[in-house]
Amino acid sequence: ESGVDKTDIASVVLVGGGTRVPAIREILTDFLSRPVKEDLNADEGPAFGAAFRAANLSSTFRLRWTGMEDITPFAIGVRLKDLRPPTEEEGGGGFKKRGSLFDANNFLFRRRAVTLKHDKDLRVELFYEKAAPLPMDTSRDLGAYEISGVPKAIEKYLGNAEKYNITELPKISLSFLLDANGVVDLVSATASFTEWVTEEKEVRKKNKKKTQKSKDSKKEKDQDESKSETGETEDEKDAETEKSETADDDDTTGTAADDADSDGVEEKPEIEFVHRKRTHRVDLNAVRIGPEDVKSMQQSDFAHSAKILLELDDRDRSVRETAHARNDLETYIFESRNRISDEKNVQKVSTEAERDAFLEVLNNAEDWIWDIEKESAGVYKSKIRELKQAGNDMFLRADELEARPAAIAAVGKTLSQLYESVEMLRTNYTWINATEIDKLENVTKKAEVWLNTKIEEQDEKSLLEKPAYLSYDIYYKVEPAVELAKKLLSRQKPYGWGKKKKAKNGTNTTTESAQSGKDGEEAYTSKIDADGEIENDDGDGADVEAENKDDSETEGQDANDKTDL
Image (cartoon, rainbow, N blue to C red; front, side, top):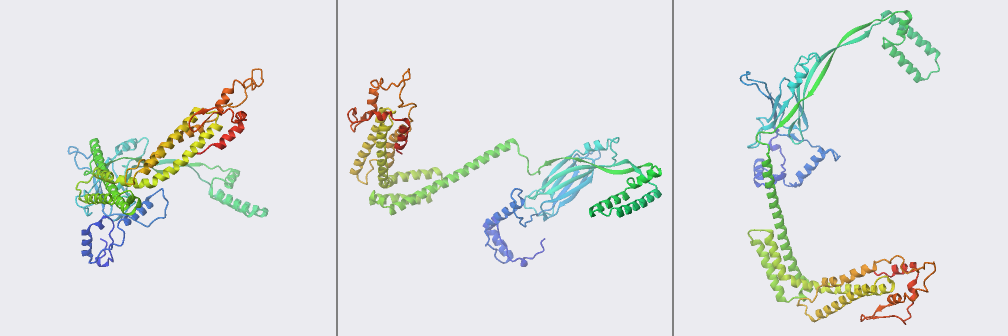
C-alpha cells in the first residue's frame, strides 16, 4: 500500500512491547536482511509520544503544537435501512442503502455527512469494510444508531397545509465524526423542510422625466453650494458629496421628492409579489446501539466484575507485602553482618563464639530465602522475628554503650534544673501550697536516688551481661518530676494577692491584722531542709515585709526567675 520496497528501508526501530518478544525481532531481521535498531529506549519512546499527543489534544495546557497526525488503518462503511421495515403482508422490501464513510488511512478529527430524502425512521449501521485487514477473531460490527422523529416532523409540517406551504419530503442530514481515538460517532441528525413563501411588497415607481429634471436641478444646486461655501473643510465636502450620492441612488427621497411635490405630481405605489425560501430544521433523536459481540452488562455482571476486581486487588496487595517482607529480611541479614564485622561496640559486648554463631544463623537464613517454595509475607516476617530473637540482645548491649552515658548527662542536667525550680518556687511563688512544692522535691529526689542506684549496679556488671537499665528507662523515670515542675511554674498569681486590706470605715487594717496574720507569714517563710523536716525561720533575718511588695515588682521577678526544663 505504501509503494515502498524493503530495499528502500534504511532501518526499523522497535518500540513498545514488541521489543521484548525475540520472535518479532527474528522475523523482521530475516525479512529485511538487516538487524533492527535498538538504540531507542523502547519504554520512553511511547511515553514521549503519548505526552506530545496529549499536549496536542489538551484544552487546559496551552503548549506549542507538535507536528503529529494520526490515522485510522481500516476503512469504515455505513448502511442505512428502515428502522421498522415493512412486513411481508405490507409488501416487504423497504429502504436500504450502503456506502463508504471513511477510507483506510484517513486522518482523525474528520467529519463526513450523509444526506437523503426519506419519510421514515432510520437505522444506521457502522462496520469495517471487508477489505480491511482486521486482526484475527475481530468483529466487523461497530454498532448502530436508531434515528427516530421523522414521521412526527412530517406530520407537523407536511400535514399542516394551512400553515406551511411544504410539498417535498424532508432532507435527512447525518453528520459523523472520526474522533481522536479512531471511533466513529454520530454527532448530529436533523430533518430539513424547505418552504416557499410568497410575500407582498409595496414598490413606488417614479416618472422618468421628473426624475431626470430633479437630478439636473440637484447638480446645479450642488455647484452653487460648492461655489458659495469656499470655507468648508475637506471632511465637510466629503460628507456633502456622500449625501448627494445617496440622494441620487434613492428614487423615493431627497430633492426628487421635493420637485415632485412642487410640480404637483403624485406617485402611486404598486404591489409586487416576492417569493422567498424558508428552511425548517428539526433535531432527530439518535440512540446508540452497541456492537453485537459486546453485550451490555447487567447488575449481576457488575457485581461479579466487582468481586473479581477485589480478588485481583487482594492478590496484588499480597504480592507487594511479600516483596516488602522479603526485602526487610534481606536488609536485616546484610546490616547485621556488617555490624558484626565493622562496629567495635559489638565486639566489646560479645564473644567471638557468640558472633560466629549468629553469623552462621544469618548465612542459613540467606540460603533459606532461595530454597523456599511458597513465598508469603507471613513466612518472611516469622523468619525476621526468629533472627531478631537470636541477635537483638547483642546489638542492644552495643547500642547502650553510647546511649546510656548520653542519657545520664542529659538527665543530670534536668535534675539540677528541677532543684533550682524547687528553690525558686519557695522563694517567689508564695501563692503555691508548700505541700505541692514538697511533692516536686520528693519526686526529684526519688529519680536521683534510682539513677545513682542503677549506675552502681551497672558498674558491677560485665559488658557481656544484660544491662541493669536502659537509656530510655532514665527518661521515663524523670518525666513525672518534669511535668509537675512545668505545671507549678505555669500557675499564675491569684488576683489581688499581697494587696493591703481595707476596713469597712475605709482605713488600713495592717496594724489590727498584724497579730492575726502571724501564722500565715510564718507559713510563707518556712522551708524544707535536705532531710525533709520542717522548721520555722523565725530568727534567721527573714524579711517579712518582702512578702508585701508591690504586685508589679513581684510579677517581674517571677517572670525573670522561671527556669526552662
